[in-house]
Amino acid sequence: MDVQAAAAVGLALLLAGICYAADPVRLFDWKVSYITAAPLGVSQQVIAVNGQFPGPVLEVTTNWNAVVKVTNNLDEDFLLTWNGIQLRRNSWQDGVLGTNCPIQKGQSWTYDFQVKDQIGSFFYFPSLGLQRAAGGYGGIIVDNRSVVPLPFPLPDGGDITLFIGDWFNKDYKDLKQELDEGKELGVPDGVLINGKGPFRYNNTLVPQGIDYETITVDPGKTYRLRVHNVGTFTSLSFRIQSHSILLVETEGSYTVQQKYTDFDIHVGQSYSFLLTADQNPTTDYYVVASSRFTNGSLWDRVTGVAVLHYTASKTGPGGPLPNPPNDIFYKEYSMDQARTVRWNLTASAARPNPQGSFKIGSVNVTDTYVLRNEAPMVIDGKLRAAINDVSYRSPDTPLRLADYANISGVYQLDYPVKPLPGPPRIGASIINSTYKSFVEIVFQNNDSRILTYHLDGYSFFVVGMAYGEWTNASRSSYNKWDAVSRSTVQVYPGAWTTVLVMLDNVGIWNLRASSLDRWYLGQEAYLRVVNPEPNNKTELPIPSNALFCGKALVPKNGTTNGSGLSALLSPARFKWTMLAILLCFLLI
Figure 1: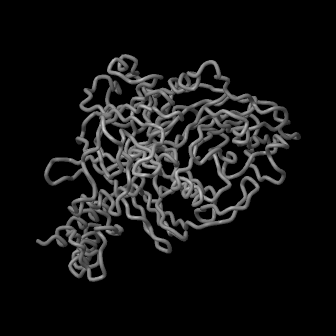
Figure 2 (figure 1 turned 180 degrees about the vertical axis):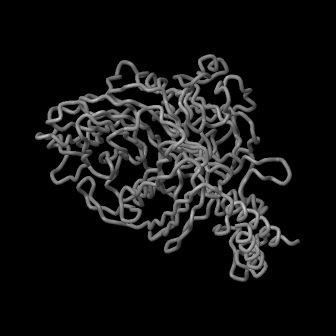
Figure 3 (figure 1 turned 45 degrees about the vertical axis):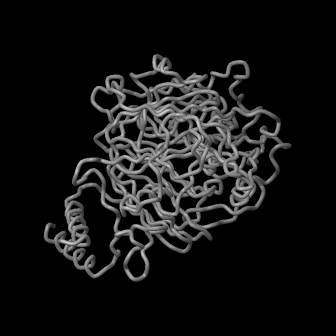
């Protein structure tokens, strides 16, 4: 049997599985385009999904399948990535340059993935260049199955999604050019809440005519707020005047429930809070997202303000904004708060591996990666950011596609998993990880700015963080009982954060700084997780609609440039595909 026939037989078996599958499918048809908006009073081009900024919410239930057709109506390439969705066995759908060829302008591509064994709050966003700085993002809600109870009463007021993030009045392409010219981006022009500018709480800082977000609530009711920091690089303090917020979930994990008057949300992170409208219902209140870990009066403008409006209210919000955290003399305020975010071990929900007792301390660590970053530096005449002195540059051929097609020379398996002496370099080096290893990843932040790191395809256990340099002795401070499981974690300047992760999801997965400027400048890596067993059944086959580019580009004559890939619609593939469809109907 030739390669095409074998591939089609695999497709037949896949279709047979689909015939018997009980998990529902939700279809989404999204058109990505530019629209004109002026969130801070300056007219500019933003990226919308189906004409919406922010884009529509993708809502599914645990184990459902999402089929998302994306049509790119921009003037450049585009990809969406699914921040926190694990894409079990399916890195082909990750939507980053290590796994996918870009969707070219005027073209469409359909993502097809299952939200396997997950619940919670996530978001999607454009992964190319600085496109997220222009929008293109939206929420993802993964609901519990009906047989799995929530660890809190169902909020009688409903569900509210909030996107907070810093914003520049400059076009995102101009921001990209500034980085290419070796410049820093400087101070953002403000903070948006759901794509809108601040309520005019200050006549000097906020010009007239700004459209602001209003959150309407009924007195006495409780609401679930899903808050995502989708900004460029600024950490934000989230708070609501005169109200407390109850933390219940972060990035797919139910947390120990605790009340806060203010809460730090860092770039790329998602949280769920319960808000009860229990204050004086005849007035409105400020909802604030203001910059953290910044100095100087220029940052005063980097404050987003929405209005919490009670339906019985007769008066708008008034008085000063609720105070931000005062940690000038105690820099561990935010870190102490982060340590209070712990896993709710009694909640019923989908859980990451290792499962069972949930005592991650009983699992032997098989590998340790110490990943250290510095402030941006000049490498080969260009401003670059690096991890362990390696600044990543995406090759023209996606890494996973190169693996599939046995194309050599695309990347090197020489990424240092510990800092090594030597000059910094630029390259497409990746970490060759061991399947089913339990890995300790230490993020050491030697930059002067707070950073966040995200790992696609996984949730990891946040077991420790502290100021100073990590050493082996630091392990004595780890929380190995109820460490929260999430996909994006902050690392404070001059500090370290350690996570533990079971590498049981086959594929090539992106590990990145969530700050857009650091990511764009090369502060990322890829983990290559391959099942060494023959007849690998732990990864889904390459999708039939896969895009090809670089050295794997499929020319019009139906052959590849020495890659060994079969043509997508060749006569042999067509014949076997028709047989597969017939088999599906016979099985039904």
